[in-house]
Length: 183
Image: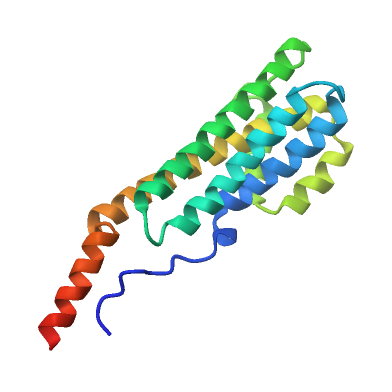
């Protein structure tokens, strides 16, 4: 068989981007249900933004076999959703006169190190049980910043892969020509 034109790209659950997004979703679900008033519309908005980030990474990965364009669009939707969520966390801290950690703050440095090391949602679900709303919001913010960097690198990878290998039509044409040349 010649050049494959429907390469399998792997399971989205193995992507660090998906794993981090799942952590963000789980933290947000806990946060929204524990620290926001049950009648606050922000609960649904925050959970939906976190869910959209996670789901669009999965859907983009699934679409990647046949469409780099769709994958790029969905990963960008994930980024945009997580930026919306970031603003919600920042708003929460600001309107309650809570502290958003400065990038050089001791807690921020520790959070960046811990969040860079852990991609398992169970770790965060356990850790947040004993944290304040201020701390949990800052941890979520840290994860969202890290996720944004990961998603930008992922988009660069998709772009580079497209430039090197072309889209599905080009790959199909190459495979067809290769097959005919062997006949």
